[in-house]
Amino acid sequence: MEVTDPGVRRMALTRRQWKVMLIATLGVLANTTTYGVLAPFYPEEARLKDNSQFEVGLVFATYAVCGFFSSPIVGSLLSIGFSSKIILVSGLFVGGSFFAVMGWLHAVPSGTPFFLANFFCRIVQSLGASLCSTCFYSIISAELPDHKNIAIATLETMFGLGMMLGPAFGGFLHELGGYPLPCYVFGAIGCFVGMIAWVFLPPTELKENQSTKINFHSLDAQLFTDLLATVCALSIMNYNDVTLSGELKRYEMTGGKLGLVFLICATVYGVSSMMWGTGVQIVGDPRYLVIVGALITSVGTFLMRPVQMLGVEITLPLQIGAQCLIGLGMSAMYVCSTLHGMHYAVHRLGFPDDISTHGFISGVFMAAMFCGCFIGPVAGGLIDDMVGYARTLQITTVYILLTASLVMLTMITDKIQSRGDEEESLRRKGEYVVIGSNAPSSLTV
Image 1 (cartoon, rainbow, N blue to C red):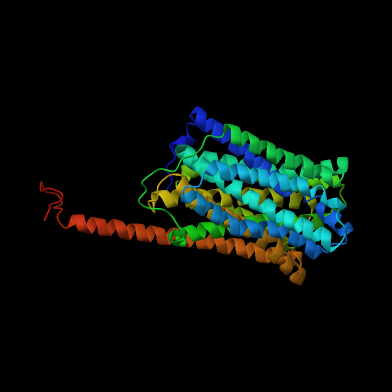
Image 2 (image 1 turned 180 degrees about the vertical axis):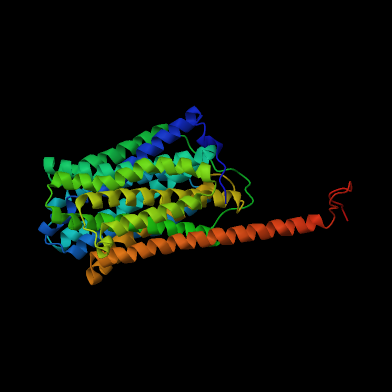
């Protein structure tokens, strides 16, 4: 399905749209930094509190599990008319407040009490994140229908920036003030953005008298493939996050240099998101870029370690280049599959171009994102334990290529179906067409 978005060429927004865009970008940035801020210091703190690596993994994984189940519910609430502004602000306050609460948990006794307290806080944080994340994408799509490509790509740029700034500032604040300080600071930021949204964000109204409403029965093979591409991209991203530090130990880098290498993938992801959003207008069908992104990502994962079986020496510059490719490719897969899903629901399935449709689509794509966030560390970690890092990346590369093949298959079947529909339409009309004569092109019988 080709995408027509004249807003890519000229970003002429109204004052209301600029206000919505600014608040959405701030919210995504605050929400994403909160997600990644624990990565540099929580695992070590948890081990000092006598928590196992499995318990540490559960604390991180539960965020994704809760988000997976709650995001479609939020999307369904938006589709039936619940206030997007109230849901969004509630999510920012809930997520920010409970992240600040985690700063007090260093006083909880070691062992199971510390694990359970953090486990519960992460569940509530995930609920807050799914509330506001789903609303951001649906509000942007509804309020900026003619600028959807650039607007969503901008949010993905903020997503990448948040993934970059969260661990960096989290590690810095941890060194400055210990375990509580990062939680207090980023929790306060989330609540502050919530106050800004409450005061300045205009409400997005649901259009009345809509004859059709999107629901779970509307998810066909095209949308399901878009969701699989999203799961693939986010699972690769999160597997990379949890295994990269172990892979880089061989270079005996300082903590600061290690942090810089971690920033590379997220930085490229954020910077390239805008490029892919603009590129959709050029190629027409976003799925072309999903396939390109998958191929780029597969090259990146192959260069991280499997290329060693070809006799290539694994070096730090090679792996830094691989991180660049992974960030570039994942950005294309996620941004373009999301754009295709939103355009497809409106222009091919015929659902209204408003908050009801975009709220539902955002909900299921957020669920796919959280699913990838869970599959990457958990399934990837289990495979890693069984067959090792290099073999896991071989499997990962095949997984990415299979996803690209599935997207390509849907494009082929889509074109065959479209050609068949066109031929059927022409057949019905062409029964009365007299080629090369002055007869009328169609007759009513």
